[in-house]
Image (cartoon, one colour):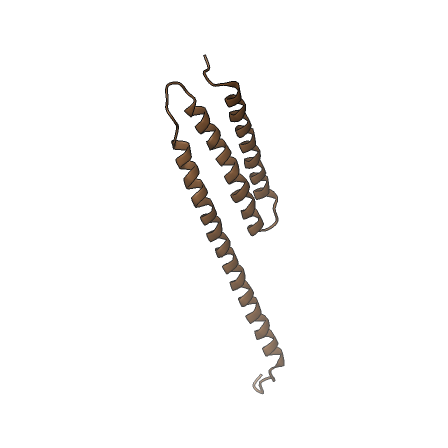
Length: 126
C-alpha cells in the first residue's frame, strides 16, 4: 500500500519528466552545437538543471517513505553538483580561450615572418 499522496506522486513524476527533458536537451546541445565553447554551455546549464530535478524527485520520493526519515543523500549530491559543475566549466572555457589565443599568436608570428621574408632583399649568395 502506497502512503504517498497523489500530489506528491504528481510532483515526483513532474520533476522526473522535467529532469529527463533537461538532460535530453543538454545532450542534444552537446552533439549539435558548432564549437567547443557553445558545446560546453549546453551540458553545463541544461544537464545540471536536469540532474538537479531528478535528484530532487528522488529526495522527495525517499523522504515520504514510511520506514525512513528525511533523505539528505540526494541533497548532498545536488550541493556538490552545483558547486563543481560551474567551476569545471569555467576552467575548461579558460583553457580553450588560452589555446585559441596561443594559436592566434602563433598565426600572427608566421604571417609576420612570411611578410618579412618577402620584403627582405635577396642574399647575393643565393
